[in-house]
Image (cartoon, rainbow, N blue to C red; front, side):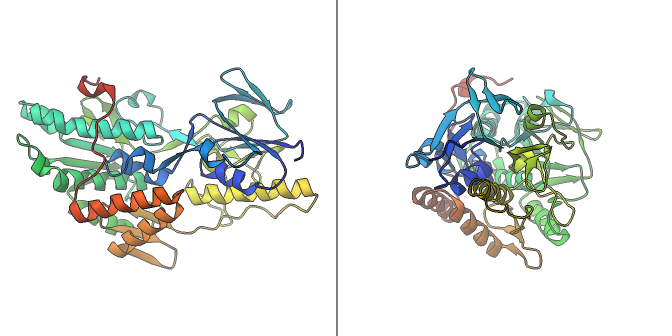
Amino acid sequence: MSDHHVVVVGGGFGGLQLVNGLKGAGVKITLVDRRNHHLFQPLLYQVATTILSTSEIAWPIRRLYADRPDVTVLLGEVTGVDSGAKTVSLRNGITLGYDTLVLATGATHAYFGHDEWEPVAPGLKTLEDATTIRRRVLLAFEKAEMESDPAVRDALLTFTIVGAGPTGVELAGIIAELAHFTLPKEFRNIDTRKTRVVLVEAGPRALPSFAEELSAYAEKALEKLGVEIHLGRAVTECSADGVKIGETFVASRTIVWAAGVTASPAARWLNVPADRAGRVAVEKGLSAPGLPDVFVIGDTASVMGEDGKPVPGIAPAAKQQGGYVAKVIRARLSGKPAPGPFRYRHQGSLATIGQSAAIIDFGRIKLKGWIAWWIWGLAHIYFLIGTRSRFSVAWSWLWIYLSGQHSARLITQRETMREEA
Protein backbone atom coordinates (compact mmCIF):
# COMPACT_ATOMS: atom_id res chain seq x y z
CA MET A 1 0.00 0.00 0.00
CA SER A 2 1.30 3.45 -0.93
CA ASP A 3 1.47 6.42 1.45
CA HIS A 4 -1.09 8.34 -0.61
CA HIS A 5 -3.86 9.36 1.77
CA VAL A 6 -7.36 10.02 0.47
CA VAL A 7 -9.73 11.72 2.92
CA VAL A 8 -13.41 11.42 2.04
CA VAL A 9 -15.88 13.61 3.93
CA GLY A 10 -19.42 12.24 3.70
CA GLY A 11 -20.77 8.71 3.65
CA GLY A 12 -23.63 9.30 1.23
CA PHE A 13 -24.05 7.86 -2.25
CA GLY A 14 -21.14 9.81 -3.76
CA GLY A 15 -18.72 9.16 -0.92
CA LEU A 16 -19.37 5.42 -0.78
CA GLN A 17 -19.17 5.05 -4.55
CA LEU A 18 -15.78 6.74 -4.48
CA VAL A 19 -14.48 4.49 -1.69
CA ASN A 20 -15.79 1.42 -3.52
CA GLY A 21 -14.13 2.60 -6.71
CA LEU A 22 -10.75 2.83 -4.98
CA LYS A 23 -10.79 -0.79 -3.81
CA GLY A 24 -7.44 -2.33 -4.64
CA ALA A 25 -5.92 1.02 -5.64
CA GLY A 26 -3.25 0.73 -2.93
CA VAL A 27 -4.14 3.96 -1.13
CA LYS A 28 -5.04 4.73 2.48
CA ILE A 29 -8.59 6.01 2.83
CA THR A 30 -10.15 7.85 5.77
CA LEU A 31 -13.92 8.23 5.56
CA VAL A 32 -15.40 10.87 7.88
CA ASP A 33 -19.12 11.32 8.56
CA ARG A 34 -21.20 13.02 11.27
CA ARG A 35 -23.30 9.87 11.55
CA ASN A 36 -22.30 6.26 11.82
CA HIS A 37 -24.64 5.09 9.08
CA HIS A 38 -25.18 5.34 5.35
CA LEU A 39 -28.74 6.39 4.57
CA PHE A 40 -30.79 5.40 1.53
CA GLN A 41 -32.41 8.81 1.21
CA PRO A 42 -34.86 8.02 -1.64
CA LEU A 43 -36.92 5.98 0.83
CA LEU A 44 -36.57 8.32 3.79
CA TYR A 45 -40.11 9.64 3.33
CA GLN A 46 -41.38 6.10 3.92
CA VAL A 47 -39.87 6.14 7.40
CA ALA A 48 -41.54 9.51 8.01
CA THR A 49 -44.90 8.09 6.93
CA THR A 50 -44.80 4.82 8.95
CA ILE A 51 -44.16 2.43 6.05
CA LEU A 52 -40.57 1.41 6.82
CA SER A 53 -38.46 1.29 9.97
CA THR A 54 -35.13 3.09 10.25
CA SER A 55 -33.05 -0.09 10.12
CA GLU A 56 -34.49 -0.98 6.71
CA ILE A 57 -32.91 2.00 4.93
CA ALA A 58 -29.71 2.66 6.93
CA TRP A 59 -26.56 0.60 7.48
CA PRO A 60 -23.53 1.12 9.77
CA ILE A 61 -20.67 2.46 7.67
CA ARG A 62 -18.11 0.52 9.68
CA ARG A 63 -19.88 -2.72 8.83
CA LEU A 64 -19.79 -1.90 5.12
CA TYR A 65 -15.99 -1.67 5.22
CA ALA A 66 -15.18 -4.24 7.89
CA ASP A 67 -13.30 -6.29 5.27
CA ARG A 68 -11.42 -3.30 3.83
CA PRO A 69 -8.25 -2.73 5.94
CA ASP A 70 -7.37 0.18 3.64
CA VAL A 71 -10.44 2.11 4.89
CA THR A 72 -10.56 3.87 8.27
CA VAL A 73 -13.96 5.18 9.33
CA LEU A 74 -14.21 8.14 11.72
CA LEU A 75 -17.34 9.51 13.37
CA GLY A 76 -16.75 13.24 13.35
CA GLU A 77 -17.83 16.63 12.05
CA VAL A 78 -15.57 18.68 9.79
CA THR A 79 -15.26 22.33 10.77
CA GLY A 80 -12.72 23.56 8.23
CA VAL A 81 -10.18 22.80 5.52
CA ASP A 82 -6.71 24.30 5.13
CA SER A 83 -6.00 23.71 1.45
CA GLY A 84 -2.53 25.21 1.76
CA ALA A 85 -1.42 22.87 4.54
CA LYS A 86 -3.64 20.11 3.09
CA THR A 87 -5.39 19.38 6.37
CA VAL A 88 -8.98 18.82 7.53
CA SER A 89 -10.06 19.96 11.00
CA LEU A 90 -12.68 18.08 13.04
CA ARG A 91 -14.83 19.47 15.82
CA ASN A 92 -13.20 17.18 18.39
CA GLY A 93 -9.80 18.80 17.75
CA ILE A 94 -8.36 16.12 15.47
CA THR A 95 -6.54 17.29 12.33
CA LEU A 96 -6.22 14.98 9.32
CA GLY A 97 -3.60 15.43 6.65
CA TYR A 98 -4.49 14.49 3.09
CA ASP A 99 -2.94 14.03 -0.33
CA THR A 100 -6.34 13.99 -2.01
CA LEU A 101 -9.52 15.35 -0.44
CA VAL A 102 -13.05 14.53 -1.58
CA LEU A 103 -15.93 16.55 -0.13
CA ALA A 104 -19.28 14.80 -0.43
CA THR A 105 -20.99 16.58 2.42
CA GLY A 106 -24.49 16.89 0.95
CA ALA A 107 -27.10 19.54 1.59
CA THR A 108 -29.68 20.57 4.16
CA HIS A 109 -33.00 22.41 4.16
CA ALA A 110 -33.27 25.97 2.81
CA TYR A 111 -35.94 28.26 4.27
CA PHE A 112 -35.21 31.20 1.96
CA GLY A 113 -34.22 33.58 4.72
CA HIS A 114 -36.75 32.30 7.26
CA ASP A 115 -34.70 29.89 9.36
CA GLU A 116 -37.05 30.64 12.26
CA TRP A 117 -39.59 28.39 10.51
CA GLU A 118 -37.49 25.25 10.96
CA PRO A 119 -38.78 24.25 14.44
CA VAL A 120 -42.40 24.19 13.25
CA ALA A 121 -41.71 23.02 9.68
CA PRO A 122 -38.97 20.37 9.74
CA GLY A 123 -37.39 19.21 6.51
CA LEU A 124 -36.55 15.64 5.55
CA LYS A 125 -32.84 14.85 5.15
CA THR A 126 -31.89 12.57 8.06
CA LEU A 127 -33.28 9.69 10.08
CA GLU A 128 -33.84 12.16 12.93
CA ASP A 129 -35.94 14.30 10.59
CA ALA A 130 -37.97 11.27 9.51
CA THR A 131 -38.72 10.09 13.05
CA THR A 132 -39.58 13.65 14.10
CA ILE A 133 -42.10 13.97 11.26
CA ARG A 134 -43.49 10.50 11.97
CA ARG A 135 -43.96 11.39 15.64
CA ARG A 136 -45.74 14.64 14.79
CA VAL A 137 -48.03 12.97 12.27
CA LEU A 138 -49.05 10.18 14.63
CA LEU A 139 -49.38 12.50 17.64
CA ALA A 140 -51.66 14.80 15.63
CA PHE A 141 -54.20 11.98 15.30
CA GLU A 142 -53.79 11.01 18.96
CA LYS A 143 -54.37 14.58 20.15
CA ALA A 144 -57.31 15.04 17.80
CA GLU A 145 -58.95 11.95 19.32
CA MET A 146 -58.99 13.68 22.72
CA GLU A 147 -59.73 17.25 21.55
CA SER A 148 -63.19 18.68 22.26
CA ASP A 149 -62.74 22.02 20.45
CA PRO A 150 -63.79 21.48 16.78
CA ALA A 151 -61.46 24.23 15.48
CA VAL A 152 -58.43 22.80 17.24
CA ARG A 153 -59.36 19.30 16.14
CA ASP A 154 -59.59 20.43 12.51
CA ALA A 155 -56.17 22.10 12.80
CA LEU A 156 -54.71 18.89 14.22
CA LEU A 157 -56.15 16.97 11.28
CA THR A 158 -54.68 19.36 8.71
CA PHE A 159 -51.24 18.45 7.37
CA THR A 160 -49.37 20.94 5.18
CA ILE A 161 -46.44 20.03 2.94
CA VAL A 162 -44.51 22.96 1.47
CA GLY A 163 -42.94 22.12 -1.87
CA ALA A 164 -44.29 19.84 -4.61
CA GLY A 165 -41.09 18.20 -5.77
CA PRO A 166 -40.75 14.39 -5.49
CA THR A 167 -40.40 14.46 -1.68
CA GLY A 168 -43.44 16.69 -1.19
CA VAL A 169 -45.60 14.70 -3.59
CA GLU A 170 -44.60 11.38 -2.04
CA LEU A 171 -45.24 12.62 1.49
CA ALA A 172 -48.63 14.06 0.59
CA GLY A 173 -49.76 10.87 -1.12
CA ILE A 174 -48.78 8.56 1.75
CA ILE A 175 -50.22 10.79 4.51
CA ALA A 176 -53.50 10.98 2.60
CA GLU A 177 -53.64 7.20 2.23
CA LEU A 178 -52.75 6.73 5.89
CA ALA A 179 -55.61 9.00 6.98
CA HIS A 180 -58.23 7.86 4.49
CA PHE A 181 -57.61 4.10 4.30
CA THR A 182 -55.39 2.84 7.14
CA LEU A 183 -56.60 4.65 10.27
CA PRO A 184 -60.41 5.08 10.04
CA LYS A 185 -61.28 1.88 11.96
CA GLU A 186 -58.82 2.60 14.78
CA PHE A 187 -60.28 5.83 16.17
CA ARG A 188 -63.63 6.32 17.90
CA ASN A 189 -64.00 10.09 18.40
CA ILE A 190 -62.69 11.34 15.07
CA ASP A 191 -63.20 10.43 11.44
CA THR A 192 -59.67 10.36 10.00
CA ARG A 193 -61.15 10.42 6.50
CA LYS A 194 -61.91 14.11 7.11
CA THR A 195 -58.17 14.81 7.33
CA ARG A 196 -56.91 17.61 5.08
CA VAL A 197 -53.59 17.18 3.32
CA VAL A 198 -52.49 20.49 1.80
CA LEU A 199 -49.65 20.58 -0.75
CA VAL A 200 -48.26 24.04 -1.54
CA GLU A 201 -46.05 24.86 -4.52
CA ALA A 202 -44.85 28.34 -5.49
CA GLY A 203 -44.29 27.24 -9.08
CA PRO A 204 -46.95 26.63 -11.74
CA ARG A 205 -47.06 22.82 -11.41
CA ALA A 206 -46.13 19.90 -9.23
CA LEU A 207 -42.99 17.90 -10.06
CA PRO A 208 -41.51 20.59 -12.33
CA SER A 209 -38.53 18.39 -13.28
CA PHE A 210 -40.88 15.91 -14.99
CA ALA A 211 -42.65 16.21 -18.33
CA GLU A 212 -45.86 18.25 -18.15
CA GLU A 213 -48.08 15.27 -18.94
CA LEU A 214 -46.61 13.34 -16.00
CA SER A 215 -46.99 16.34 -13.69
CA ALA A 216 -50.63 16.61 -14.70
CA TYR A 217 -51.16 12.90 -14.00
CA ALA A 218 -49.53 13.23 -10.57
CA GLU A 219 -51.74 16.19 -9.68
CA LYS A 220 -54.89 14.29 -10.66
CA ALA A 221 -53.76 11.21 -8.73
CA LEU A 222 -53.12 13.30 -5.62
CA GLU A 223 -56.49 15.01 -5.89
CA LYS A 224 -58.12 11.58 -6.20
CA LEU A 225 -56.51 10.73 -2.85
CA GLY A 226 -58.02 13.89 -1.38
CA VAL A 227 -54.91 16.10 -1.42
CA GLU A 228 -55.55 19.83 -1.81
CA ILE A 229 -52.99 21.33 -4.20
CA HIS A 230 -52.16 25.05 -4.18
CA LEU A 231 -50.02 26.03 -7.18
CA GLY A 232 -48.43 29.38 -7.97
CA ARG A 233 -48.72 30.50 -4.34
CA ALA A 234 -45.82 30.79 -1.93
CA VAL A 235 -45.92 30.25 1.81
CA THR A 236 -45.39 33.61 3.50
CA GLU A 237 -45.58 32.56 7.14
CA CYS A 238 -45.16 29.41 9.25
CA SER A 239 -46.08 29.09 12.92
CA ALA A 240 -47.19 26.52 15.45
CA ASP A 241 -50.78 27.44 14.55
CA GLY A 242 -50.52 27.04 10.78
CA VAL A 243 -49.30 28.53 7.52
CA LYS A 244 -50.14 31.57 5.47
CA ILE A 245 -50.39 30.77 1.75
CA GLY A 246 -50.16 34.14 0.10
CA GLU A 247 -52.64 36.08 2.22
CA THR A 248 -54.74 33.05 3.18
CA PHE A 249 -54.18 31.48 6.59
CA VAL A 250 -54.60 27.70 6.96
CA ALA A 251 -54.81 26.35 10.50
CA SER A 252 -52.44 23.38 10.51
CA ARG A 253 -50.60 21.86 13.44
CA THR A 254 -48.29 19.65 11.32
CA ILE A 255 -46.10 21.27 8.66
CA VAL A 256 -43.36 19.59 6.63
CA TRP A 257 -40.83 21.55 4.59
CA ALA A 258 -39.87 20.13 1.19
CA ALA A 259 -39.29 23.35 -0.73
CA GLY A 260 -35.55 23.77 -1.10
CA VAL A 261 -32.03 22.88 -0.06
CA THR A 262 -28.76 24.60 0.66
CA ALA A 263 -25.34 23.01 0.40
CA SER A 264 -22.91 22.31 3.22
CA PRO A 265 -20.27 24.98 4.04
CA ALA A 266 -17.71 23.34 1.72
CA ALA A 267 -17.34 26.46 -0.45
CA ARG A 268 -16.54 28.57 2.63
CA TRP A 269 -14.05 25.99 3.88
CA LEU A 270 -12.21 26.17 0.55
CA ASN A 271 -12.79 29.89 -0.09
CA VAL A 272 -13.99 29.18 -3.65
CA PRO A 273 -16.96 30.44 -5.71
CA ALA A 274 -20.41 28.97 -5.07
CA ASP A 275 -23.86 29.23 -6.63
CA ARG A 276 -26.95 30.67 -4.90
CA ALA A 277 -27.54 27.40 -3.06
CA GLY A 278 -23.98 27.37 -1.72
CA ARG A 279 -22.74 24.60 -4.00
CA VAL A 280 -19.13 24.70 -5.14
CA ALA A 281 -18.81 25.63 -8.81
CA VAL A 282 -16.45 22.77 -9.74
CA GLU A 283 -14.19 22.35 -12.74
CA LYS A 284 -15.07 19.92 -15.55
CA GLY A 285 -13.08 17.24 -13.75
CA LEU A 286 -15.06 17.86 -10.51
CA SER A 287 -12.10 19.45 -8.73
CA ALA A 288 -12.52 22.70 -6.79
CA PRO A 289 -11.37 25.82 -8.70
CA GLY A 290 -7.58 26.19 -8.35
CA LEU A 291 -7.34 23.12 -6.10
CA PRO A 292 -6.55 20.06 -8.24
CA ASP A 293 -6.18 17.80 -5.19
CA VAL A 294 -9.63 18.66 -3.82
CA PHE A 295 -12.76 17.19 -5.40
CA VAL A 296 -16.36 18.13 -4.62
CA ILE A 297 -19.23 15.80 -5.55
CA GLY A 298 -22.92 15.18 -4.96
CA ASP A 299 -25.24 17.84 -3.55
CA THR A 300 -22.19 19.87 -2.48
CA ALA A 301 -21.18 20.49 -6.11
CA SER A 302 -22.64 22.63 -8.85
CA VAL A 303 -22.01 20.60 -12.01
CA MET A 304 -23.10 21.68 -15.47
CA GLY A 305 -24.27 19.01 -17.91
CA GLU A 306 -23.51 18.91 -21.61
CA ASP A 307 -26.89 20.50 -22.27
CA GLY A 308 -25.90 23.55 -20.23
CA LYS A 309 -28.32 22.65 -17.42
CA PRO A 310 -27.24 21.84 -13.84
CA VAL A 311 -26.84 18.16 -13.04
CA PRO A 312 -29.72 17.25 -10.67
CA GLY A 313 -29.01 16.60 -7.01
CA ILE A 314 -30.12 12.97 -7.03
CA ALA A 315 -28.50 9.71 -5.97
CA PRO A 316 -27.55 8.42 -9.47
CA ALA A 317 -25.73 11.69 -10.21
CA ALA A 318 -23.76 11.50 -6.95
CA LYS A 319 -22.82 7.88 -7.64
CA GLN A 320 -21.64 8.71 -11.15
CA GLN A 321 -19.52 11.55 -9.78
CA GLY A 322 -18.01 9.33 -7.07
CA GLY A 323 -17.12 6.66 -9.61
CA TYR A 324 -15.61 9.25 -11.94
CA VAL A 325 -13.38 10.78 -9.25
CA ALA A 326 -12.18 7.29 -8.28
CA LYS A 327 -11.04 6.81 -11.90
CA VAL A 328 -9.27 10.18 -11.85
CA ILE A 329 -7.38 9.30 -8.66
CA ARG A 330 -6.40 5.89 -10.03
CA ALA A 331 -5.14 7.45 -13.25
CA ARG A 332 -3.02 9.99 -11.36
CA LEU A 333 -1.47 7.31 -9.14
CA SER A 334 -0.63 5.08 -12.08
CA GLY A 335 0.68 7.89 -14.26
CA LYS A 336 -1.95 7.23 -16.92
CA PRO A 337 -3.89 9.96 -18.72
CA ALA A 338 -6.87 11.24 -16.76
CA PRO A 339 -10.34 10.47 -18.09
CA GLY A 340 -12.09 13.19 -20.05
CA PRO A 341 -14.45 15.73 -18.45
CA PHE A 342 -17.25 14.35 -16.30
CA ARG A 343 -20.37 13.53 -18.28
CA TYR A 344 -23.63 12.92 -16.50
CA ARG A 345 -25.89 10.25 -17.96
CA HIS A 346 -29.47 10.73 -16.87
CA GLN A 347 -31.08 7.36 -16.13
CA GLY A 348 -34.57 8.67 -15.59
CA SER A 349 -36.73 10.39 -12.98
CA LEU A 350 -39.10 8.50 -10.70
CA ALA A 351 -41.73 9.50 -8.14
CA THR A 352 -44.59 7.71 -6.40
CA ILE A 353 -48.09 8.94 -5.68
CA GLY A 354 -49.30 6.80 -2.81
CA GLN A 355 -48.90 3.03 -2.72
CA SER A 356 -50.34 2.10 -6.09
CA ALA A 357 -49.24 4.69 -8.62
CA ALA A 358 -46.01 6.26 -9.81
CA ILE A 359 -44.55 8.17 -12.72
CA ILE A 360 -41.30 7.45 -14.55
CA ASP A 361 -39.64 9.75 -17.06
CA PHE A 362 -36.94 8.03 -19.15
CA GLY A 363 -36.95 10.80 -21.74
CA ARG A 364 -38.54 9.23 -24.79
CA ILE A 365 -40.26 6.61 -22.65
CA LYS A 366 -42.74 7.82 -20.05
CA LEU A 367 -44.71 5.54 -17.77
CA LYS A 368 -47.44 6.15 -15.21
CA GLY A 369 -49.82 4.21 -13.01
CA TRP A 370 -49.38 0.84 -11.33
CA ILE A 371 -46.87 -0.45 -13.91
CA ALA A 372 -44.61 2.49 -13.13
CA TRP A 373 -45.10 1.80 -9.40
CA TRP A 374 -43.87 -1.78 -9.77
CA ILE A 375 -40.84 -0.67 -11.80
CA TRP A 376 -40.13 2.03 -9.20
CA GLY A 377 -40.29 -0.56 -6.42
CA LEU A 378 -38.03 -3.05 -8.18
CA ALA A 379 -35.48 -0.34 -8.94
CA HIS A 380 -35.32 0.81 -5.31
CA ILE A 381 -35.09 -2.74 -3.95
CA TYR A 382 -32.22 -3.43 -6.37
CA PHE A 383 -30.17 -0.49 -5.08
CA LEU A 384 -30.67 -1.29 -1.39
CA ILE A 385 -27.61 -2.66 0.40
CA GLY A 386 -27.73 -6.30 1.46
CA THR A 387 -30.11 -9.20 0.95
CA ARG A 388 -31.73 -8.69 4.35
CA SER A 389 -32.74 -5.09 3.56
CA ARG A 390 -34.09 -6.04 0.14
CA PHE A 391 -36.20 -8.85 1.61
CA SER A 392 -37.40 -6.71 4.54
CA VAL A 393 -38.47 -3.76 2.40
CA ALA A 394 -40.11 -6.01 -0.19
CA TRP A 395 -42.07 -7.78 2.57
CA SER A 396 -43.16 -4.47 4.14
CA TRP A 397 -44.45 -3.20 0.79
CA LEU A 398 -46.22 -6.49 0.03
CA TRP A 399 -47.87 -6.51 3.47
CA ILE A 400 -49.15 -2.94 3.02
CA TYR A 401 -50.32 -3.73 -0.52
CA LEU A 402 -52.31 -6.77 0.69
CA SER A 403 -53.51 -5.58 4.11
CA GLY A 404 -53.48 -1.80 3.89
CA GLN A 405 -51.70 -1.69 7.26
CA HIS A 406 -48.47 0.24 7.84
CA SER A 407 -45.96 -1.70 9.92
CA ALA A 408 -43.97 1.14 11.52
CA ARG A 409 -46.64 3.20 13.30
CA LEU A 410 -44.66 3.52 16.52
CA ILE A 411 -44.17 6.68 18.59
CA THR A 412 -40.89 5.92 20.30
CA GLN A 413 -39.34 9.23 21.41
CA ARG A 414 -39.35 10.23 25.07
CA GLU A 415 -41.36 13.32 24.15
CA THR A 416 -44.43 11.19 23.42
CA MET A 417 -46.41 12.36 26.46
CA ARG A 418 -45.20 15.95 26.38
CA GLU A 419 -46.82 18.84 24.63
CA GLU A 420 -44.65 19.99 21.73
CA ALA A 421 -43.99 23.66 21.38
